[in-house]
Image (tube, rainbow, N blue to C red; front, top):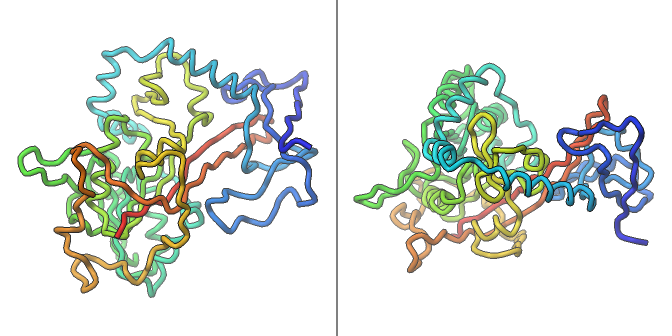
Length: 389
């Protein structure tokens, strides 16, 4: 028996376009097993679920299916879309306009969506269990830096969960409007909240001071003082030319042994496939209708960006966070910040520091609109990167 089979299910009343994807395209099904269709909830967050679409299952029985690969028809359609996108790129004038001041477009975005943008990311604690450990009453003093905080979709859920009086959350965004939304949130200065939250304007790709070469870090955050850096759907908003500086800034701000929690868009995601004419800026990099930018990654590319390696994941289970070692600057266990923020020595001043890859996963999921009987093929990248001791 083949490892996977494709079961066509087109009908006469199929929707001509499912969120921009032809309705005749079907997901790849796994061979039928004796396992129930709704298996036990996954225990390892990097397994990304256990509801697998098998032969005979009704696609529209549930709202989502895990580990769904797309068939050749979808891949052919996607390549056709990409070719069409390349043929009608963004003009050089507009490309410069969108790239020169990306914060301008995010300011407009948050100004237009101030009333309805906040969405509680309840899935964070499950995808990154370390957040649960660090928010317990007996957890050590911990500094979490959220980059691209937006309206506080990540910071406030963590604060609401927190029982650690020594937890400090620093939320930053390069959009002034986003930071205003965070500071105006009733949870920002809530005296009943456990722990502390602050917000400031910061661009993760900020270059160092041209005279002193001192890294440009968030206000109130010292080099080598952060335990956790959270990058949730933020790295994709950067132009490829900004990646090196962004990684170097993350390296500077993290303690030795600190960890990056990463989640972002993957290559072939529905959001990429459905882009129309006049949105392509460069390969896998687009501008949305509101002027904000988005990039779609593949696994090997992210391995290279963060660890200087291609298509190889350590998945080193021994590289777990030692909660006892997490402490704010000034503790006896802390190393000197003079050494903590130094990247690995390199003869190339533009080289990226090399993080260790603790875990890496590709989350391929099919979401279902059961009422309209439509399918949405999504792809996200999720990882934990570790700054060597």
